[in-house]
Length: 615
Image (cartoon, rainbow, N blue to C red; front, side, top):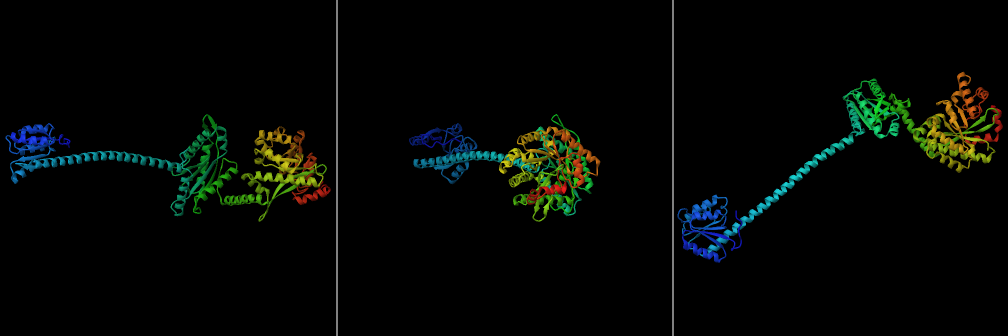
């Protein structure tokens, strides 16, 4: 459709009439009104002009030769290029029938002759306005359709983006769910998923819907050594291979999970008895005993495994896990590379141990601990040489707790470090007080060191600080440490011993003969004293082999210029044998048990009584 020219000078009107006089009259009138006018003498010419696209509006006579106005209008309306051109019939025919026929042919308006020019102008302007309105509507529709297409395109893009976001979100959710439930290194279930499955089994077990099951808690022995020496990359490769080997030993219905680090959990379904679980544990250990070839390193791995049989007595997964963990630590205590089945006594012992740990922490704060002092006697003269400081615990409810019971707990929990410092400071402080009150400058105070305390980074600084605070001469202090502690880390021990000797602090190897018994190591350490363990002394007179061992220790120590002290002397026979073997000093119940501070005062008041009674 042609775009309407709204200005009269631009509006093109086609006049169609077979009477030249009519054409000239109307053409002249319209031109004076500013319209652009063309004339057609018949219908054929009119159709040609219209089809050329020239006309904006047609004034059409009806009665013409060849093709009348009705037919011209019909043909205009049939043609796509001309059907939108408004046609106003201008005719002398004035009947209703003529007008109906004109409108039926597609006419837009009808003017009867003779006409008034004002009427013609009004009718022309009306049709032009209608056409303009239609064109405006069409334009608006086109613009609207364009906007709709653009909006639809935007919506389609947005929908596509939303679809992609939904897909990505589902992928992310799936990944997050995987990360929440699985170990990324081994692709095994993690603690969360394992506990869910274990809880499900417990619920089914409570409803009698499945047989018993078993849980295996596996911890690799000394795995930290691999990470520390070869790096975590190699360590991760080993863990992945461990997971693969454990899977070989399991059924598809079993669950293998990694809890982190070098800990693995196994959930064995459909166990009829604990022996089945033990056989699986042994299969796993057999697999792990095979060498690991990782990154050009050949490694050997062992694991300690705790086993617990799930039964109707368990209500919570945490309790099953707790007992499996307890059994695993019992396996480690047995020497590692083995498995241990849980029994209720382990839980009771673990509970007691936890209670003991809690009480021990409180005891340190509440000053329930005390230092006792056991005299050390020269075997040849019976004179007092010094004292060994020993910690004692008077529990407010249990009474005295044996050191055999609470010292291992202190070692395991790390409490031994503050406990050892407290004992050393208390002993040095008390010994300095006795030096002021009595003439005992020649005596020495012996203090035991734990392995953890000895290898503290600031151990030497701690010793210096205590001696400075208590004003005790370093020559009066003797430090005792077990032989296994120094042999395990001989190089570091030697450096520490040298620093202590530079301070004129005496050094003693405690419980000698119970650990490595590596006599060849002795010459490497600047040690003053060897203490023969009470286990050898107690068998004097019962086992001749012990005398030979003691004789060998004494002979070697003498050759190295060391003093020999025997622990646990309880009988005169033991004392006499040791004296005959040239043992220098001794301590034990024959002379005196460990004494509280107040009772030590009586020894200083009458040193002769000690000699008279026991030598």
